Image 1 (cartoon, rainbow, N blue to C red):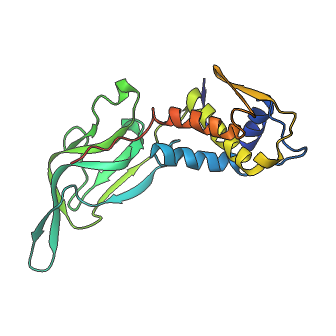
Image 2: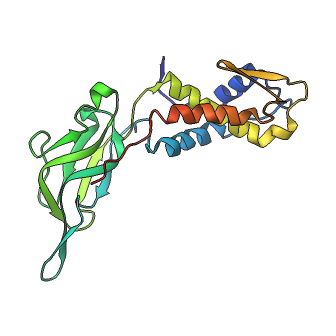
Image 3: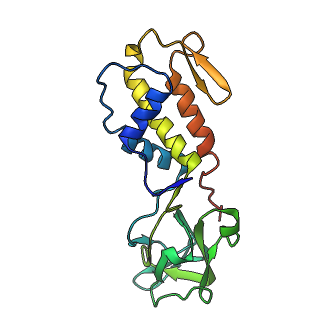
Length: 220
């Protein structure tokens, strides 16, 4: 099952309640879901993770670290591969790439990489130009709908909910009702005697899921 939007505070509250944890009566879950989504992006490195609704422009320096001095200015670059530091879900997410001289044409002047990203269910994360690029600072502009996916996989949805639930537990751990005895998490059961802060177990679960989605940057 996939989800077109991030979890809400009500989803976090329902998860905590269904886990058997007794929070103080009338406890208000406010902002945990939004904070959890931001934390998920920090953990994976993809910002945004959920694809933007509309295209936005980002500026980049030319790829490479070679400097060519001219009479009144310097050109930089000299490489072909530009790490985006962000995700393009597929080729349709890219609107345009412009450089110092003119726009670039996909599969003629550049290609999206890694080439096998779609078959591996990963996003594109870099541009591989046909020839080395040169320019001054911030002269490359890429307009796109940035994001890893437009539908959150179930494991991601569950991980974000657990991050939010862990945040709530961090805030209220001292107020947990003493009648709470244990919580079953997957194949493991945690009790007050084993782990007073069950929120740590939830966040550890999220971290395991996040490791499957972490950004990997190619060293140039």
